[in-house]
Length: 359
Image (spheres, rainbow, N blue to C red):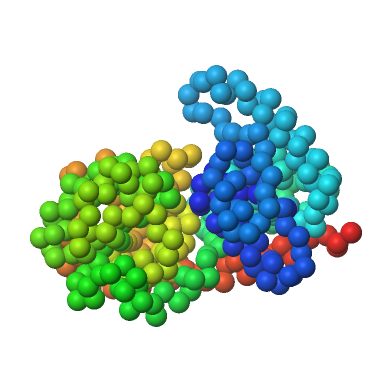
């Protein structure tokens, strides 16, 4: 049984782990558990796996009526999780973060089933910290995680990565054709997350004249929430995209990348090895995107700009990166050192180590 959801950063690692397990054990059965009405309820079936939903959501930072419902949602989810576990009888239960993983892994521990946590970020989430005491193994992507978790349970694996990203360097020609780009012009890729980023989109809109003056081509993934607003900005050199399904080709085409700093994005970009400007979202739990970006920047492997710095510093920072090939090479070389291309295999090795025999 596997649970991870709320954002793509929790869902896609869960799917990657399931796919590696399925490759090793073709006859194995899988059941995902998510939060009702969250994106995992559609993304997991699209990947070919069954999913059940729990009535669960997080606690809001400010006092709301929704918070008053949390104890009832938690109790309801614990009871349903217990029923699902009893019925499915799993060898192991895996959590990659998100609201639903809390009740599922807590109830699995109560029932004596081995559990594994996969923490993507450099700053552990509330749910995983809550579950750590009972977990058999905790797979992490950053050093120094013993400040959140019991040291003897930590395994430094990296984050699960989609297999199609392992050979990005050989796909540039295919990528240029796929996005109908000019191979003689530099290409800027903007990735604001699966739903898009309001602030990054506003920034890109304000800089379109600069990009044009620098003779750049732009792959602009603005997100489905903002596509209608920015679709009119499309030109032969500016590709405005709701969603990029072929991320391997987008990375292959790019010369420079502007991205949010979610754990999945950081892990993918480490493997891709292109120069990156991270603009972390300040609106996530524990401000973990800023901490992710700070870690990479501390290794001289990327540039970080906070949202509040964009108006004053973006243009100067971007132009320096664009024109300084020595800086580009340094960032590319250093971010590749952070890559963990065998992370998914290492996590599944750990699942196999802790799982109980089939019954």
